[in-house]
Image: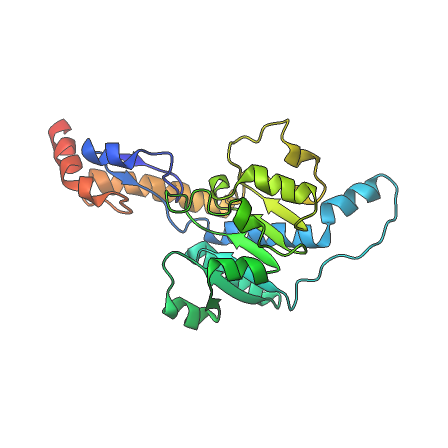
Length: 259
């Protein structure tokens, strides 16, 4: 079996694993709060221009200018899994209106959390902040291409703590360079680590972090414990958090043969 530490399993060939009778498990919902908090922090940092202002202060300057207030603005969450829902709650907590789009909308979620589902194009056109919370798949790879990004408001902020492959990074860089959108907070990239020559590093309207949204002590402890628990459960013959349960029987037979 393969016990993945993290929710995403896009670095595992699930088809091959299933064919070979290798069970794959993950650790879902162990970093939900951590990632949503990071997305909120990126959103606020970009809106308030905190990194640029901090840099000016350290240079001995006292430059005071207009920044963006998010209370009363619209947050658009792309994806309404555990992290997307938590981000919606945090957005509402600072007074934002929330709308969402996902591949599989849930009326129950919308009703209980107090947001509305809209079409992706409408979300991009009307949101002041767009925050991505989708898994990468054949359906979602390159979801925000050049044409989709062009729908966003010139005053809008884009936040991505999900996967870099969801966005056309070259198109996004150009939009940021030309101020076609106001700014972005990015924790993930098409290729990681981010190339030291990336033009994103030269843009002042971008806040960058090294795929570290889930790197809190609390989230790491919870995730590592679950990854180990998944192995122990498999060895006991009662696997938990299986991604490809269709491989279970063959995997258990192989385990029994080895024992």
